Image (cartoon, rainbow, N blue to C red; front, side):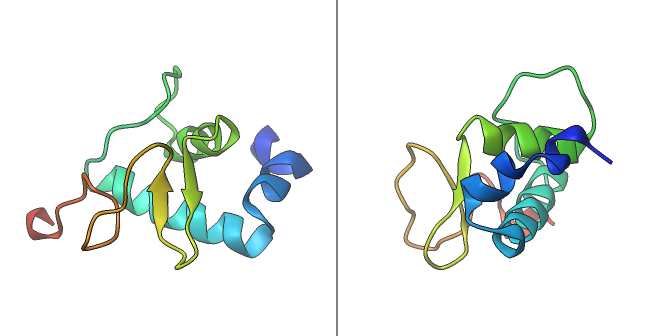
Length: 88
């Protein structure tokens, strides 16, 4: 098990285990679809990258349970700005 998941900090940061699971799953989909990591770490493990993005306050779930990147404005279409569904 990843050490970050053993700590309550990451759970509390997103507002509970359900929201954490949702955020991890949605961000993993975006990374696998080609989104760039928002943190600079020496790991190819996508879950580790997502957990570091959460711990470093780079991503969060908005009120509609969509992944948002800190500091970006919402697009009219929703979802992550750099995820193009037509390229899937």
